[in-house]
Image 1 (tube, helix red, strand yellow):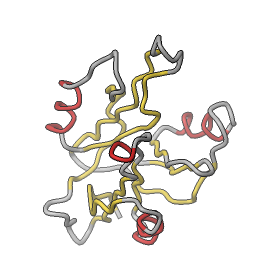
Image 2 (spheres, one colour; image 1 turned 90 degrees about the vertical axis):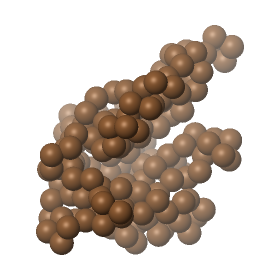
Image 3 (tube, one colour; image 1 turned 60 degrees about the horizontal axis):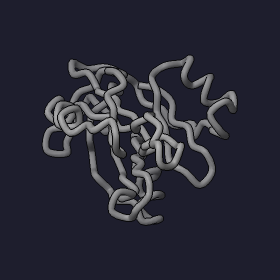
Length: 160
C-alpha cells in the first residue's frame, strides 16, 4: 500500500502514491523521513482515506483539523464519518480510496496474508490531534504503545 513516513515528535503517515511520498520527503510539508516500513496493496476492498478538515477557522486563522489522516476498509465506518462531517468544526473529510486490501475477520488474517496492525494515540480524549500508526511490524506498534498509544490490533490484511 505504500510507505510510512514520520516527522520528529509527531505521528505517522502512509501513502500508496509515490508522488505524494516524494512530496512528503521534499520538506515542502515539514520534516518527514521514511521509517523503512512498507506493506503491499491488494485485495477486494477499497480503503477509504480521510484527512482533517482544511477549512480555515475564522476565529483562529488555522485549519479546523485535526492534522491527520485516517484509513479504513470498513465502508460503514467511512459512511459514518461522511455523515457526521461538519465543515465548520474539527472533523474528518473524505479524501479518496487510497488502496485495496482484505479486511481482518475477528482480528485475524488468512495464513497467506500479512496482518496490518493499528495503534491510536488517543488524541481526541487527551485534547490534541488524533493519529494512527499502521504497520505489519508488531514491534513498531508496541513501540508506540509503550509511549501511551492504544493497541487496536489487526485492522486489515496485506498480500505477503
